[in-house]
Amino acid sequence: MSNNFSLENSTLTLNGTVITGFSDDTDALAFPDIILAQVKRGADGKMTGSSTGDKGGELEIKLLATSNSVIFLSSIAEQQKNGAVVNFNGSFVNSLTNVSVTLTNGLLTQYPPMSSLGKGETKNMVYIINFERIDGNYEAATFG
Image (cartoon, rainbow, N blue to C red; front, side, top):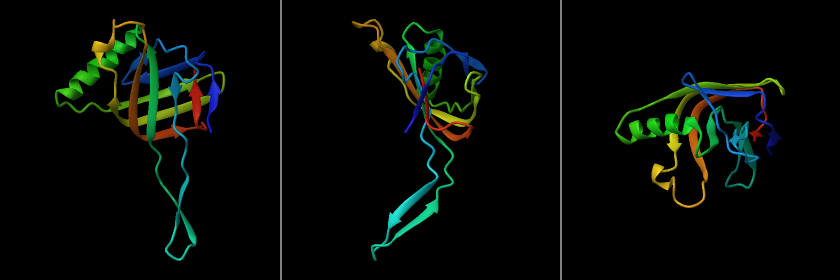
């Protein structure tokens, strides 16, 4: 279950670039749930649990189509389409809620095609970056 917070007093930085122009949606920036353990049922019907050790996950970013950050993220998408491997590292800080997150070794896994711009109603541009590690003091937070 995620908590909703305002993006006011927040800064998301990826590869040294401050991301701006978030959508007005309540889920403009969504951090993944923290999964501590996995539970499996054996052939005998008994359940066993184990720590996952997984500290990563997907960060979903929704930007307005007019955001300057669309150009930055779309240029990375184009580089990846042409065979480049671009790793993301960064941070998220919300001074109002004291949330501080470090983002390590991410890869852009989803982006909107630029051809969708200018066709009818302006829509949000959704980018998903899958990070190897997301470390910080948050509990499945959604900002918007």
